[in-house]
Image 1 (cartoon, rainbow, N blue to C red):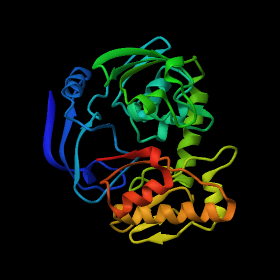
Image 2 (cartoon, rainbow, N blue to C red):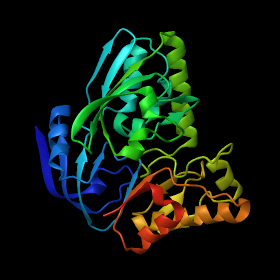
Image 3 (tube, one colour):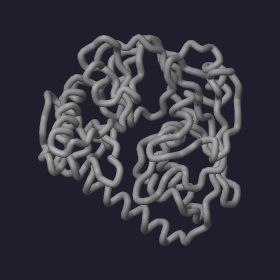
Image 4 (cartoon, helix red, strand yellow):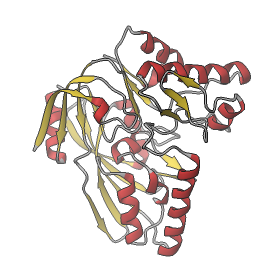
Length: 305
């Protein structure tokens, strides 16, 4: 069954706690319902937990699908099949339960598998593509369900072929090696502690790392050297413990965030002649000032009207 809500405020979904109203938001409860929605061609974008998306604060002339209720998984031996809306942290615990190693890094991730596979999420020298076997996707060009191999997914740093084709992940299969449960749990605990000490809690609205790491360098390191920690724009602030995070500390608007991002981007470009590119996605209105500023920083991540 699918719940459809008209004039839905995306601020309710965003972990940034920012966002205007969309025309309608659909919440399918299973893969079959998601496919039926996609076949209608009435929806502009498919999202999961909205933990990597900046929505404009203005009303948004879009209809969206939110997959967070499609959260099933099946474990058979060392194989696990995961639906698109399943949280990474849920699967990390399932792997621990079954002594499967490779997803320890997901323990603190707020995102769902649809988005994580789309961008090939990674941390702590692990990536979601490491033990990937195949994906069931919906090809929006010919309205068909297809199975893609790891080679066809063309995984790279913060990239999969889904980014290029616009295909929508339905579910994915992984085959992980057996490991020692105690060591897996120790690694997860270290990862949780790292996030606690270096990254902001979700009690502060945030959407994770703001910029991608440039080749052979770290966006956080460059921003730190540019003394960006603690810099503010309206209600948005660069996190004081890690310069590649922005927190919504005082009812920030999307324009506050965009302006602060542009300040970060400009400082690194001026000091090091390196153009850091946004890791987050932006859904906004064409023709606006914030849209134009976003386009300067990275047009390839833009969702247009």
